[in-house]
Length: 148
Image 1: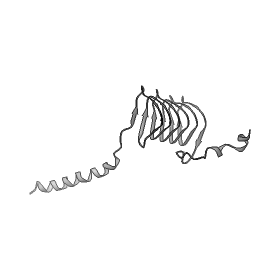
Image 2: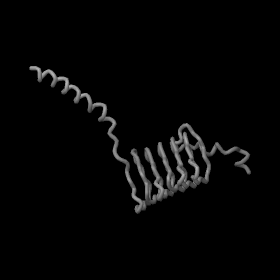
Image 3: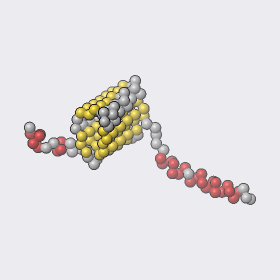
Image 4: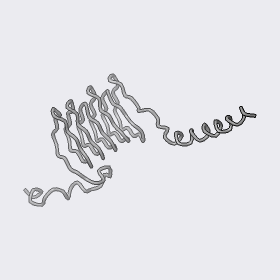
């Protein structure tokens, strides 16, 4: 009878453990290797790691652009880490340009970090919700500059 008493609490503990871990299941990031060239738009609700060349727009939850990667198109993601090259507009809640980053285009962000050594050509604009493609870009230009 004594062995059955300790077994009852052991059975209760494992049944409660899987409940918190089940909703946190996250698929692995989609990896695009260095020898891959993609022509077309990409959309994912998950994470994407690019090491190759993409000619098209990318929309993802988190995007990591590798050192050898080139993206030619608009990038929209919650979290963007650029180690390689982006040619086009970049919109993200959290944007990070590392020392090896090369960005040619405008950046619309909520928070941004640019490391020493990163190359950037374009404008930077902070917005509370940069992920919306809203027309909030044009009114930012002062009337005096628009007329010149």
